[in-house]
Length: 223
Image: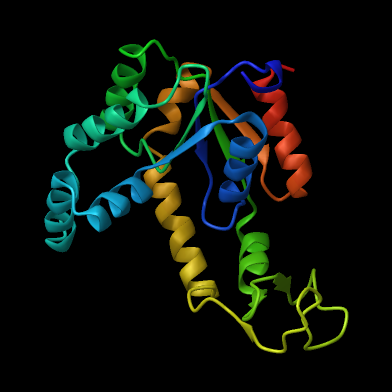
């Protein structure tokens, strides 16, 4: 185990823009954890043209929900390839009570336990401001923000000197608020389940990225 830290298996929750991806990458880099994103797994399978990928492609094109049992089997296969000393971050799973039940079985049958369900809490209005104001250098991808991080020289990227910038088309208020509502609808069924088991930990997702990382680390280290 890296740095002598105990491996933990966690569910990381947070709406789009809360910094969940950044914190997951930090845990992967600093603790050697493995991030399992059901969306990424299915997209990779579709791209690779595996049997599961072909099945997933047909199901998604038909607009149907991916069967819980089949998703559980796929996750199980991925877990089998991860050493026990490496903690796992579940991203985008589970989203229903049935999936939570399946995950318990997947973990226990492999000698693992779910240690924490960490939710990055956000203020919706502040999150809208954070997301709608962000933009990147079209050349190198350096990130900027209308309010919080402008280039030192207006219109010129600090990192590469590029003069073209771009914004994601879905970084607008209506889309952000819709995604927030979808997130609440998807997490509402599972949070009470884990709260009853004393597993839910909440972190201020609006804090500085370093502070958020420290708060998560404190939970993982039992501080």
